[in-house]
Image (cartoon, rainbow, N blue to C red; front, side, top):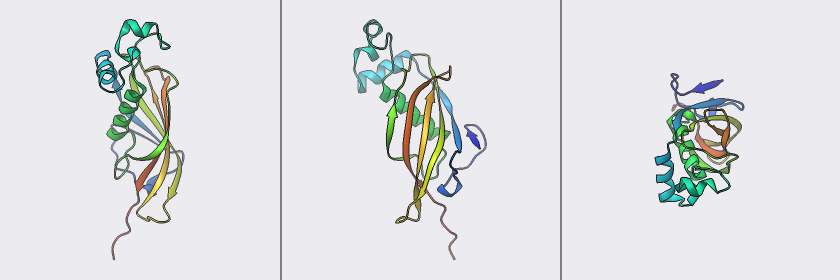
Length: 159
């Protein structure tokens, strides 16, 4: 079952989710000014700020900060790429950036539910592990995020 942004949907509770279920976000295009502004404020390294310095770096050209890519990933998840009841609430995870995000890249996030665990001590919620791949317009993976998310359960009807 794949849920894409733009389709009529509701929010998913823990009880609605299934291992293997997939979600696809909308998209966001990175522009050079946005990359440089984020870097100036949060990751002021030459390969994120200056075209000429970036040419001589490991990246061979201007590259967005991995943290910028992670921020855009979160935006895309919140805007419908992970339509979870109660919001996208992280409880930990791992992130990798196998290739740089460049000016002009159009990013989208493809996510898959890989584990679901109802809480034993908190019956109103559980933990879901989601693997999200942020891809550019060529389908190349620029970020892999494996996150543990706290997800609300449907409350039983009151008697």
